[in-house]
Image 1 (cartoon, rainbow, N blue to C red):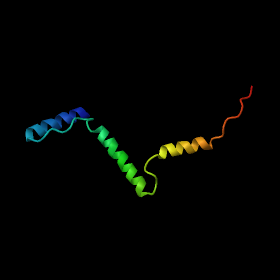
Image 2 (image 1 turned 30 degrees about the horizontal axis):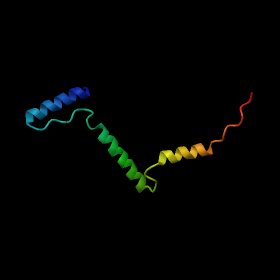
Image 3 (image 1 turned 135 degrees about the vertical axis):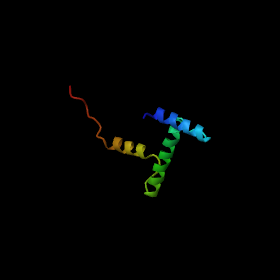
Image 4 (image 1 turned 120 degrees about the vertical axis):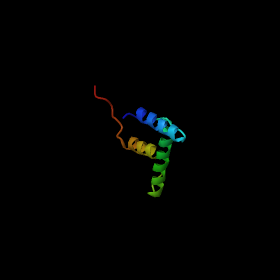
Length: 74
């Protein structure tokens, strides 16, 4: 059963029972992404790691430690 078919079935059941219709598929996707981000930040703080800027600091560290290319051979 596809997501759309399940949504239609749930909407039909809610209508028959007099309940509010469920949200359409994809409506709350960004809310879930924000909650996941907040949860990861919380876990980082609990573990004693910085909650923000970890990707930038790793990239900066990698760029600093890479050897600079010398002159190109001709």
